[in-house]
Every structure is written in structure tokens, then in C-alpha cells.
Length: 276
Picture 1 (cartoon, rainbow, N blue to C red):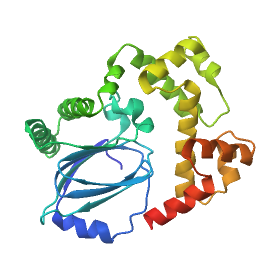
Picture 2: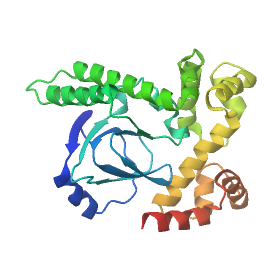
Picture 3: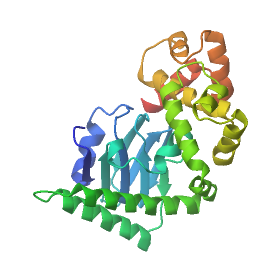
Picture 4: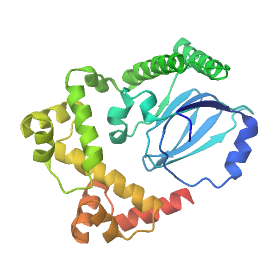
């Protein structure tokens, strides 16, 4: 995507074309928010396939492997797709933890809040269609939309409200560091030193927000990347392990099985059957 921001709708005439196209699981270099007004969506993400009837919201973080298949329901489909580069609206709660929670899809009630979400989508599209669109207006509207979505998410997952506390900025900085360094064989002390704090305090923050230790979060990030590589490349198990800082294939396989409940080879076979 060359644009920084793009918004469009999927209607019944688009469904058949998408379903008949070559649509393999993939990742992209932009963020994507789907607002389902009518229809049904089959979404392969977080290495699981989920079906949802509208109304729903689905958020796909940059770099996440996924596949979207829209379907008609009662002959209708209307799904807003909002794509934007990370720099367009860098401060969103989603980007803090979307990699670590398997809840990208949120079914919603058809109430006034959802109707307001649809109205915001219409306002953003209307602004982008102007001869000289003001993207500062679009940015504010998108921020408001995320605020509404996050409010609905908290009703479903109330424990996530802890992200609003003062620890979240440190946690965000930790995740940014992790994105740059997770392929290296670095431990808790490395990240704590970079954040000018003790390993104990960093662990406390991570436990409060994700109920995981720093080491567990590092392994989780490595596991996600391992799954992405197993799904989207032909690299060997040893090559993938080495790329993620594991010098021995047996140790990588052991860690993967402990975290995922199956070996890398079994995961690759299972995912191949699921998406075929």
C-alpha cells in the first residue's frame, strides 16, 4: 500500500471475486481495521480460523499472518476496511499488545455505539473523497473510532483496563525494544538495562499487564515469528530456530513444543491442512 491511509467497503459484488481469488495467509506492512455492518467473515488469524456474523470489529496488526474471507448473510455484505500506516496514528492501545492476545476479533451488539462507529467510517470516507482532504480530521476520527472499539473491548475483557495505568508507557517501550531484538539471544537483564530499571521491576510491570514474565513474553514473540515462518516459508526447522537465536534444533523444538503443545513439524502439517 503506497498511501498512508485508505478506507473502502466490501459489498456483495466483491465477495465472489475475493473467494475465487488466490488468497493465501499473508502479512502486510500496514495496520487494518475491519468494521462488519452486514454479512459474515471467516478470519484465519492467531493460527486459528474463526467465523463471525456482523456486527463485528476485527483488528490486524502489521506483520500478523492472516487470511480474510467475506461471505453473504441473508444476501447482504457490508464491511468497512480501514488500512493505515503505523505512523498515521502511532499512539493506539492496540499496538501495545495485539501480538500477545488472541482476541483480534470482537463480536458487537447492534446498538447505538456500533451505529456511531459506522457513522465515523462514513465521515472518514467522505473526507478522503474531497478534492483536498484534510487528513488531520481523518486522524482525529480514527482516534475516536479506536476509543470506541477499545471501550467495547474492555467490556468483554475488563482486565485489559490495566493498560491505562502509568506502567503502560514502560511496557510500550519494552515491546518496541523487543521488536528490534527478539531474534537475538538476549534475556531479561538486557531489556531492563535498556529501560534503565531493574529486572525485578520490569517483571512486575509485565506480570501486571500480561500476567507473564519478561522471559515468557520474549518466548511468546519468538514463537509467533516461528509460526509465521513455518506457515509462510519453506525454511527448515533448524534454519528457523537459528534465525530466532536458538543454536540447537533440539532445544528450539523443545521450547516450541512446550509453548505450542506440538512440535514445529506437526504445527506446519496442521496449518497446511487447515488453510488448504
